[in-house]
Length: 114
Ligand SMILES: [Zn+2]
Image (cartoon, rainbow, N blue to C red; front, top):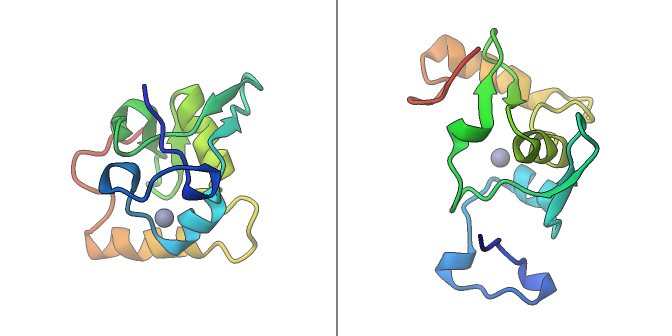
C-alpha cells in the first residue's frame, strides 16, 4: 500500500497525494508517517483517508464524543493526531462534538458506534 509522503519529505503536491484536513489535524500530523500503537507499542503507518476505510479502523465511544481506534493503525493515528484532545487542555473537539450531537449532525452517517 502506498502512503502519502509529505511534501517536506519529498512527496508531490498532486491531488492523489493530498488529503483534505482541518488545520488542527494537519498541524498535528505535521510530516509524520507513523505512530506508536499505545496497546502494542508497535510503530505503524498512520491511517490514510485516501486509501483506507474509516469504519475498519474506528468506532465512536458510547457517548459518541470520543474516537476509539479498533486497530493498531487506528489507535496510533488517534494518539499521533490527538483526535480526542487528550493532550490538549482546551477539549475543544469534545465540546464541538457534543454540540454537533445535539444538533443531529454527529456522528457522521455510516460511522460505527460502541
Ligand atoms: Zn481534523
